[in-house]
Length: 163
Ligand code: GDP
Ligand code: MG
Image 1 (cartoon, rainbow, N blue to C red):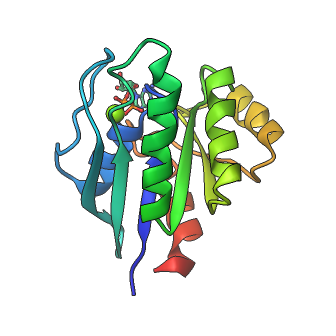
Image 2: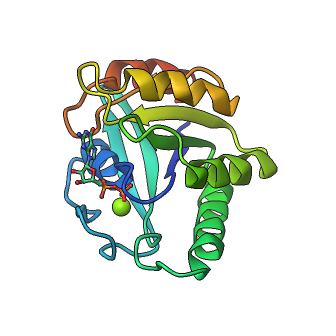
C-alpha cells in the first residue's frame, strides 16, 4: 500500500522546491517570482526507502487580485480531496501570515489530516517561525529546509506509518 501526500500552503513557502526534492526531477517549476507554475502537479516521490505520490499545488502564484483567495481555496480543496495526508508548509523566516491562516482554515474545514511543516528553517533560521507555528493549533511543526534537504529524516518518520 502507498499513500498520496499533498503539499499545500500559500505562494513562495517552498512547495515546489520540496516537490522537486522528493521527486528528484525538475518537474515543478521553481521561481523567485510569482506567475510561473499552474494547477496541480503529481509526481512519484522517494524519501529514503519510502515511495509515495506527491502533489504540488501550484497555480496560486499567477493571480494577484481578489480572485486569489478563491483560486487558492479551490486548488487546495482539490488537492486535499486527492490526498491521504497534507503537508501544510509555512515559511519559517516570514512567520505566520494572515494568508497562512486562510490555508489553516481551509484544512480545518476539510478535516484534512495535516502535517505542519516550517520550511526555510536551515540552521537556526526557522526557530522563531517554528514557535509561531504552534499557535495554529495544528500540532507539532516539523522543521524543514526543502532547499538544503534538512528535516527529511523527521518527515520520513512521520510519514513512515502510512507507507
Ligand atoms: P512555492 O511558491 O511554494 O512553490 O515556492 P518555491 O518552491 O517556488 O520557492 C519559493 C522561493 O523560496 C524560491 O526562491 C526558493 O529557492 C526559496 N526556498 C524554497 N525552499 C527554501 C528553503 O528551504 N530555504 C530557503 N532559504 N529558501 C527556500
Ligand atoms: Mg510552486
